[in-house]
Image 1: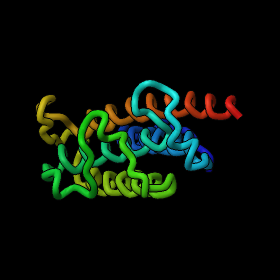
Image 2 (image 1 turned 180 degrees about the vertical axis):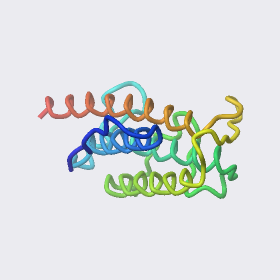
Image 3 (image 1 turned 30 degrees about the vertical axis):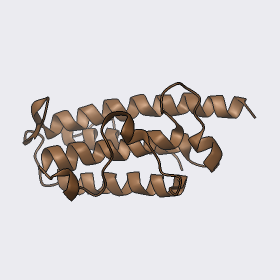
Length: 162
């Protein structure tokens, strides 16, 4: 799997959507091909693991697109995790391919939801108030880029430990 080429010019929405997709893909790449043991290995004090980053990213997709933009109740979302550290928790029965597929499904649902909104359309976040689709794109671009960096560092540590 290779990262999508950069789109460096074009309409704002195209560029935002493309950058978000690049960061989604970069995050998947940090865990792609790891063994189940390595994907779950805790190398830092927090619950941050390669597989946990992907689980958390799927939670973020659902929270911002399904809960905030669509206004769905938690019980109506495609999946639910406890906010905060709980969103990093992966069940023993879930495999790395399962969690990657979950993130990809959540991302696809987010794309479908976003297609019905303009960049200036808003949803309400419980603490942030009204947020536009533009804000959600920028927030997730930032978050997924940061988590892909975390994943890169974790993968480097796993590779060096071999």
